[in-house]
Image (tube, rainbow, N blue to C red; front, side, top):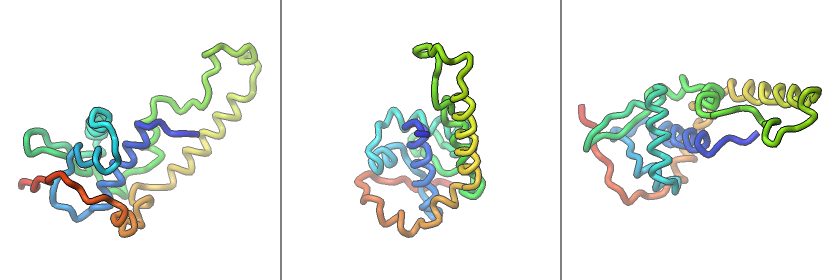
Length: 152
C-alpha cells in the first residue's frame, strides 16, 4: 500500500518539528518547503489541516507560524494515516467496472491486508519514528530563511 503525497508530506512535516523539541521559534511554511523541496501551496493546505485536527498549534499573523500541538508520544501513526488519507481502499472495482466484482474475493483479501497494515502503524507514535533524532537533525540542510522568535 502506498501513501498519498499529502499524507507523506504531513508525516514529514510532523517529523521535522518533532526532531527539534527544544526549539524556541515557531516553524514557518517557507522553512518546510525549503527543507523538503515542496510546493508552498501544498504545504499550506497540509499545515492548515493538521492544525484543524490538533496535531499542530497554528498562530496567525505577521509573526505567526506553527509548532506541534501534541506531544510526539501522543501522535499515533496509524491514526494519523487514517485522518490524512482520503481513502484506504487499495483498489476501485468501479473504474473501470470489473465484471468479476459481484463474486470477487480479492476485495476481502485486500481489506484484510489494509487492516494488517494499519495494525502495524497503530503500534508506533511520532516519538518512535524520530527516536534517532540526533541522526535525523544532522541530515537537515542549512536554511537561508530567517526564523522568528516565539512571543510569549
